Length: 328
Image (tube, rainbow, N blue to C red; front, side):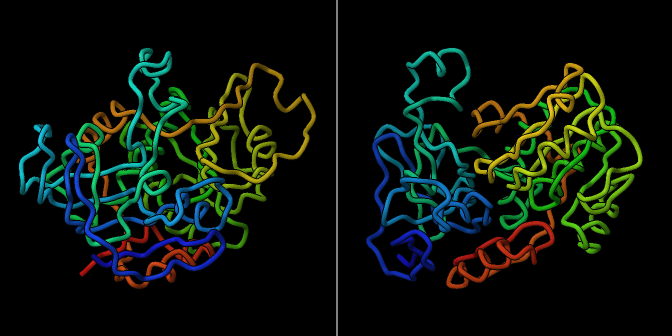
């Protein structure tokens, strides 16, 4: 099969013809129809996340059709359309797993990091960590739901019942979660890169009450904020914009160093927290909710061979919504 392969961090992906993967006894072989490009993929390629499997096929927002099953795989039939997210395997026996917090499993393995992912014509996955794709979505439209949507959904729940919500960084995750937040009756303020009027306009089109650069304070205090941008300097900024008792959620898997800030910004029972990975329950809940909102994804498609161009457009902030690779 044809795949885009990471052979060394901080180097472009390389197009390779590699052996077709085989499903494990409890796994499925998937013919990939679409795979969205996530900022986590960029962190892996740029060497900001340590110790990925090398060589590695990145990609963890995979949509495709089951073409073969392992001997003990029973959840899906050949021909079923499935989605494969970031969480690829957990041990099932540790304290975290037994407490319903499998996202924190110390032995977890992740698609496109520990396990080969979807920047390829074929992919394999443990069927327990695959999900039916809502029928309302075409393949390309569905792909960003599988990480941008899922981690955004987990971050939104971590923010609590905030009436006025701030979103810092308006990329793939934020453009999905603003739709969920508006569906729930929340007021959303979007903070984009300073000077990014196109991004602010996109946020307003999707229902933001106010949208401008993150160097501005905004028209009113927030009840909660979610930081999607991997910029540590936004943490004290967001805390300063959140009212007493509010929550700031760091939604990324990687962030630049957080600068020191006066305790006054945290005082007043403000909460600063992160979200990590996702659970299978997150995926089931969000994929049931998305078509009811309905969430509409904005995408730009690239042929598989142009994965490096997609990554560079993401790196340089040239995307509106999400980039999606298609193998054909």
